[in-house]
Amino acid sequence: MIPGFPVCYSNAERPDNMAAKTFEEFDTDGSGSIETGEIKTALESMGLTPSEGTLKIVVDRCDKNGDGKISQTEFTRLVKVLEEIKGLRQMFDEIDAADVKDGQISVKELVAKSQKFYGREFSDAEAKEMVSAQDLDQDGTLSIDEFLQIMVDRKV
Ligand SMILES: [Ca+2]
Ligand SMILES: [Ca+2]
Ligand SMILES: [Ca+2]
Image: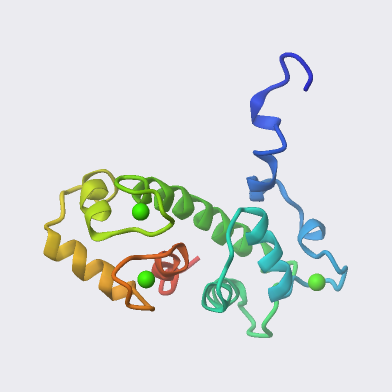
């Protein structure tokens, strides 16, 4: 470690900085487009283990011409979506840590952080409804993958 070297350039921080990455860095096989597997790698470098569902959301939101992969012209959309995921991930981690930081958002945790992230305090019933709306495996809590499903209908 170089003395006085800015913390923001540490190796721990860099892989997260998607906006600074180039198309070529994502296109690891040099095919001229970014395929699902390469998006998976990018998300894994952000510390995520994306499900098929999450990968599909990311591709669908960026893939304007519907060929199932991300071209140079669609790349700016991909960067936006990955930045959004990064923000959602931070939000997820903070909500998750409100009670027990176990990689799952509970109803109790959502209530505890609702004022901060949603601008008002939810009732238990409201929080329960929000959780169950996205709780794909119906275990009563939200995993990061379930949480990311809120991006489905958003436009880039
Ligand atoms: Ca490729
Ligand atoms: Ca938790
Ligand atoms: Ca769940």
